[in-house]
Image 1 (cartoon, helix red, strand yellow):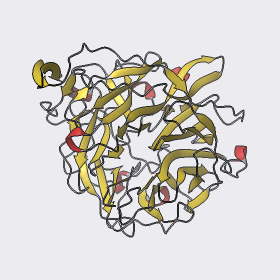
Image 2: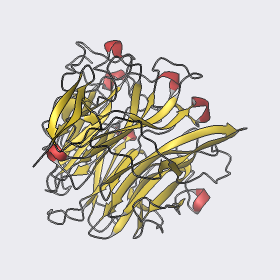
Image 3: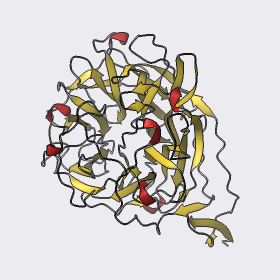
Length: 499
């Protein structure tokens, strides 16, 4: 016989007790986590700011999880090399190192490297780290490994001299007609951030021609995902006030014209923090795609950002934007730089989702007073309800961070992966400097992020966008993510919603 128990299902305006079967009520408590440092900048080159690591990407397959990131951040862009940290036992222990052959500091010819992204190709049993080597040219390359520990010299994906914000994904569904296809995405700044895609069918050893979309679309920070059917969906931040997405149904032979996912309405982070506002995406076991980004449409006068999301099963039609109810819309908290992970063994109304993000407890702060923290939130019902936001790192002062030409930096994106059903986030965390030496490194949690299935859960179903919501700052669009090349207003496309 099933004995009724009590659990909480809440909106942020009202919390009510709901009678359910088989769920045990417990009192909510803040997460108690221990952090594990994954790596450390050991370079001593003059151009870099030491000791710093920024901007991790993370992917897992089986019991192995690989994270890659910039090491020794350089003010003008990239780091002295790309570092990696790999666990082959579900996050119990880690091995770290640097990718060989990319920069002059590890036997290569480039002055810096940026924008690491990790994928795994199950058919060819190979790990891939996509990077952006920076030198006389800025191209896209991949490093290969069969164990996530020993890496090859880089293989060129494109010879474009103006590539930016690359990403990579592979089709790992054995029943997919395109099993073993890997897809690389980037934008070409020399052509106004024209989106480009290339496909490999041999484990990243060779790559096909750079293809545009049918609409010759522009954007930055695309994060492709693959449905079990083999359809590839690429959500991306457009330049004209929209999050957009495009698809391929033929293994990367062609790509559709991008469709609008939602308008993009954004609060500018205080303290001049580098916060690019890029999207993060993930797909569940049934092929439902989630795309998330920081957005202020639910906040009066756009005083801070929530993490918001839209869902799609087709890539052509998308759900209305909802907020992750981390805290009330009347709170002082500003949320940004989200990373989403979905347990690949779950789907639909029972999909398990974890979001890791940075935040300011007080949005209205200054460069000297801003407190930067890392938090996470989970859902076990496909985003219908969420646990309360929980702090896992911080506070950090902005003066503890390396300076980019877009401000103090932790990341443009961060990584979240599920390993055997357990979520891990990888993020940059900074401690107080020692003299002129910074202490910003990659961290994760020693144990998986705690998922409390019987903790109070919150819904944003009743939350409505503020009528006429608009960004609180003049939107600036650049051909590159470093902010070196502004897009002339004459190239902007009018936004029909007036954002």
